Image 1: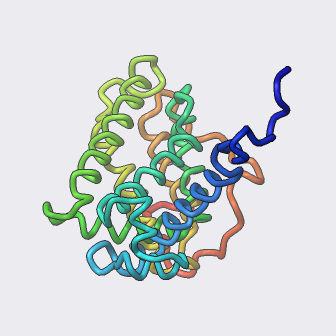
Image 2: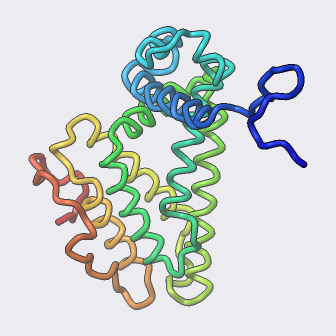
Length: 245
């Protein structure tokens, strides 16, 4: 007859057990804490001035414990950037846009989402500035990222021209570059003075005006639902975008 599980064998030793329950969950939680802490350090001090020792101390672990999860500071940086990009893709770009208007609405949602992640936005702006140096470990990442985002935007706009949503002859590359420039410019203004600019509202104003200029019907974005844009402090500075509301 088979022995009951958990009984000892003839040697009297307890049968080997698998990994303790929760071990992996604890490891995942610690890794996530390291990533979250690194975001704040990279946002405040940039990559070069950030220290693995300080990041580990703020996580309540040793630097050796941190290196158990990440091979080094460059690996930690690229892991932070990959996590942020994965969030954006899963949260907002998992489904292809049905129209240019739908894509623009998704960009407004992304701006609203970023207002709820100030650490990520501060880190992004800091690292983009640093990565202008070709020797920076994130230089290749941001170069590829901007090329990929621009190509995706241009492809969506060209599809809009092909299906008759946008006017023939629309300069899709120029519109794509302007859109990226406005999004990043608003983020810089928001990081410097969060109460002075409502990112999603200002971005929506720009995209609505752009769509009216290039759409065949001359119509802009559909009216936003009451809960589509979060309440924000009214702009305390002049509208940075000519013609904005």
